[in-house]
Image (tube, rainbow, N blue to C red):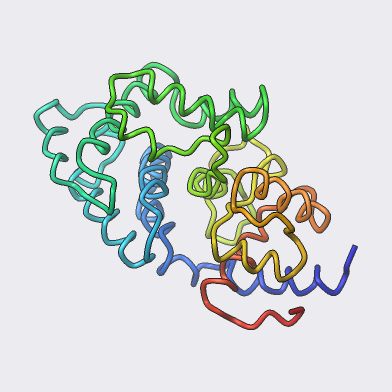
Length: 257
């Protein structure tokens, strides 16, 4: 193990994994809520919107929460069809009102018929880890009526995607380090089983540090990165997402580079 790199990664985690990180990150949306289901649903929808500038993501997620009367669980489970239909004017980049309504209907069934997002993800993790969990979610969501266009908004590892936004959502729900950023709501999934969210920022930093050799930011790259991070902390490898993403997005100088 490279002890120098480990110390610098740990120091970078300490720099970003604190409550000051929340305000400018999409995780601020689920932090507005206290009810477990509200945190899950708002977090899931926010994570699916999380591409582009973080300020825009937060603004759009706030708009969506307002349209859901800032009670996402009650909206998901009880809103009449006419009210759900009022989401048809929501838009964020290529994610439109039809996509939003499709996911709201799927989430309703997930909570009313399948025990909620934690139950669905936990079953997949028990069968085949993060890969199986994300694949099973995709299959379940799109077992209900939907437009083909909406399928692109929910990543699939089998299609080669790094599934960054879903892995980020899982980090939010599963990690429990008492730092006040990630929620640690789901104790049915071990943090050691998570896959590190991988995007342009974290990928570039990881390659510069020698933690990632694969050039594409795909599922195989996410697995390679996570496996290398497990060398530094096998119980909680994804905590280093704070170091890689935070350093990359802030363009801070990483001492080891």
